[in-house]
Image 1 (cartoon, helix red, strand yellow):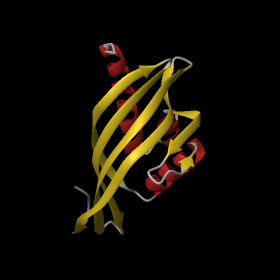
Image 2: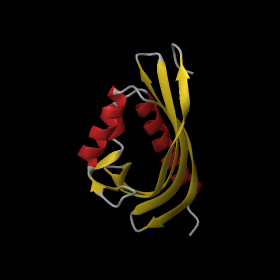
Image 3: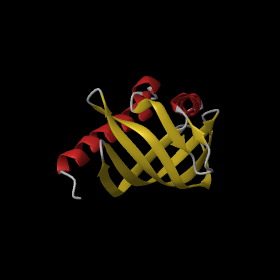
Image 4: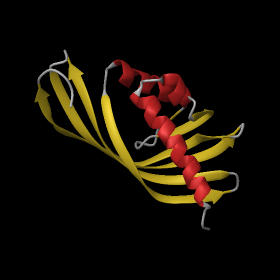
Length: 146
């Protein structure tokens, strides 16, 4: 089934909201993307809910991680009132200590996201992470971030 371009555009807008919320460390805006009954299956098979996911993200925000990423959409299909989107996400994460020591990693994740409209807004209700690789990519010393 070929999806109307408007559905892709709607999801792209939700991804843009996620990016802005994450970069601004706005946990409320970021959390609004996820259904209250979220089931997030991690790569090890364990499943966490919305509360645990947002606690984990909030820890990242407090630690001052800097992240950049992009994704490519591998698949997008409609199943009843849900949209299942399979993404490959590539990114970098940098953590800093004392504003002087910076360590970075490269992230490669492949996951399926199930979107459902809740009160007229697309929200993520389920996630299944198929693969996730986090590779150390180096150290940098000096003030400021790139």
